[in-house]
Length: 155
Ligand SMILES: [Fe+2]
Ligand SMILES: [Fe+2]
Image (tube, rainbow, N blue to C red; front, top):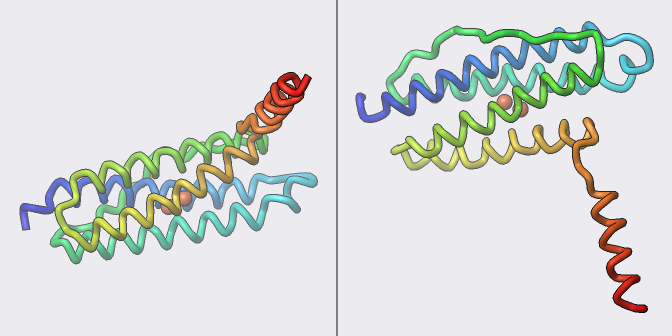
């Protein structure tokens, strides 16, 4: 089925990234020490399992589209520092959004296109969660300056 070759190749990038994420999150769950362990172990374990599920979902889809899922794993990044771990995982989740979005663009199979759209939303939720955990959302500052503007306008 050559018409899906490009899609299959991008989906194989996704499967490799999901395997990478599954192992990276698992490693991070093991490397947690101190109070961080209580707070983050379950989250990392859950993300690890979820990534493995994603590899299965998209590997199954590759076979359905006439391809062979590759069993490739990218570079695993690990640290003993929680913030660094979250940064590394945030990078992986952003990469996932990028790959699935690229797959959506080359997808000529309608149902797979809907699946991809749903999946991009899931991965973007992970990006959002990690971004907030890392304190990379500056909502407080914006809200504070908006309040000041409102207060200034009232005067
Ligand atoms: Fe995923
Ligand atoms: Fe994810």
